[in-house]
Image (cartoon, rainbow, N blue to C red; front, side, top):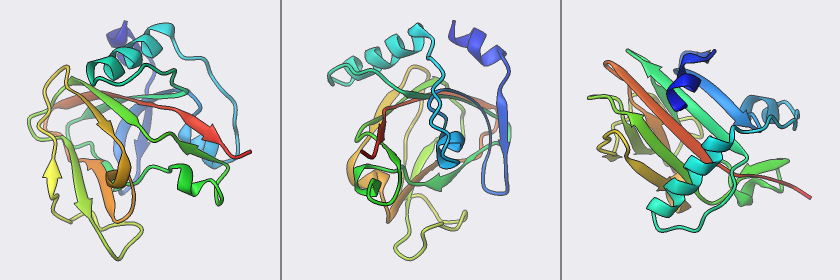
Length: 176
């Protein structure tokens, strides 16, 4: 079922800083940024898969309200960035929950999740060397939480040499 989703229409995000294909479910990041809080239902199997990822990491299950299927072809990458969290709610109308989960469906020999540190810039340079990168393999799962999701730490995906497919599971929270 997942590969059927990969085969469906993928939106291409192509800027100087990021180049990847995505299919987003639930609340959509770019719509949220524009104040559009519409929700598109997730296929049930994706929520089930997210719960299995949580269980695989020894965490309790949860329902996700934002799921991103990302397809990186040769040369694609994701800029180093932070994810909003509860500390952003006074300034923003939404944030992501404390835990962001990921599943690597297809690993690439060079493209991988990496972490950099930039104590000065809110938008870091693309040429900073990672202090850590995740050795990825198909079926690998991870959870991002805590300080590594926030400034001065940034995470991204380095340029891929073949293809990388991953799924990100998040829960969106709104300011009341």
